[in-house]
Every structure is written in C-alpha cells, then in structure tokens.
Length: 263
Image 1 (cartoon, one colour):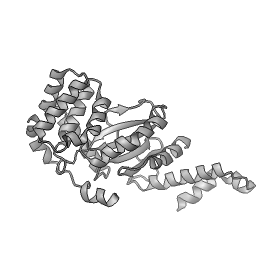
Image 2: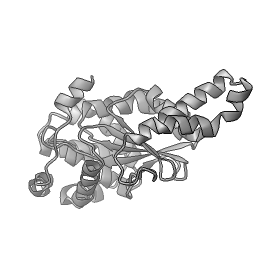
Image 3: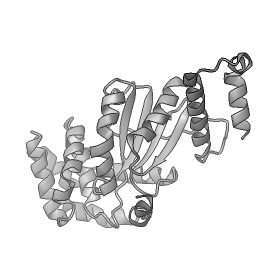
Image 4: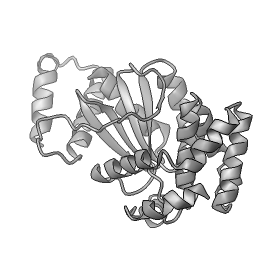
C-alpha cells in the first residue's frame, strides 16, 4: 500500500493551482538517558514487571519517533499548528491528532471509514483525544477535492462540519468522478439532507470564500513536510508531535497515544 501511496498520492501541490480554482469553484544518547532517568530503581532491584517494561519501550519508541521530525532546536518540542480548523471531539482533550487530508483521496476515505471509528470509540468519545481536520486537496489528480473542502467549510459555518465530513467520505465513489459542476450539485444535495440552510450553503459554496483558508492549510502542510495524504501529527505542544504517514491501522495510533497519555 505504501508504494501505491507514493506513486499515486505524493504529488506536489502547486500554489498556482489556486489562481484558476477561484474561477473554477464558482462553476542513541536519548536511549541511555531515558532508561537512566526513568527506571534506575527498578533496574537495580531487578523488579521490572512486564507492564513497566512495555511502558518503557513505548515511551522510548515515542522519543525516537519525535526525533525524526525536523526541528531547528532539538531540545524543544516540535509544534504543529492546529490553526482554527474544525475539531472533532472535546477541544480540551490532552492529545491532538492533526490530520492533513483530501476528501477525494481513497486512502483518506479508508482511514475515515475503517480506522477513525475505533479511535472515536476508544479515545475521542472518552475525551482523551481530539481530531483537527486540515485540508490538503491534491488538485492535480483530484479535481473535486478542493470543491469538497469548500463544501465542508461551508457546512462548518452552520455547525455541521462533522456531518458533511462523514458524508463526503462515505459517498466518495458517488461524486469523485463527476464533472466539477455536477459534484457541486451533489454537495448541495448533501447539504439538504443534513438540513442546512440551502441558500446560505449554496452561496458559500459558489463564492470561493474559503479558498484562502484552504490554501493556508496546504502551505502549512508543505512546511511540515506533508507530500501525500492522509498525513497525521499526534501529540501536543508540550510533549511534541509524532508524524504518521498514510492510512495507518488503529494499532499505530494506539501505540503513540498510549505512550503520550502516560508521558
């Protein structure tokens, strides 16, 4: 799957794309110090339980993953901005998953239909984790991705981001191959099914008013090294963020989240 992501999804997003779209939218030191600082007593007493050992290894793996992220100051936690983008879950949850995603990307849809439900059940609905959705439409291969992002932003204006987010991924095969004007009509139908104010939604959808916000998400994603979708950063500003690339299974998220909650 990873090679498929690299071949099909890792496409550079050009800034010039948006100029035409505004019109178109209308139509090893760390290892030693870790163990020395955290488990000296247990090592000396030879009383390390399997649970303690597992936690130690999880935390160590977390540190190693964090060190892979580029940072000018190695001692400082890596910070990834959530901007003011839509949040799924409790805004005060201690751990944040910042996702850069493309509504037309099949791997993104796979994550949202196969992996996210378990993350919701185990962590988000429990108030431990929140998900911040940032747009990364790869317009060169997904011509309806940007209009879909705008549709989600317009639904967010009426408090229905999550509902539109869900329907766009669940019904991706219904609109992804349509002409853009037909896709826009489909998004309008979705808004009606979600009981949004139709006139307000359609006006928002055709105005292109959220183009600049989506462009900012793209720029931030590129600055963080995102080149394909979906891309995730898990953590918070205090402990830093761990990067996950692609439609990872639940266990990949669980390993990082559990270590961060115990940090």
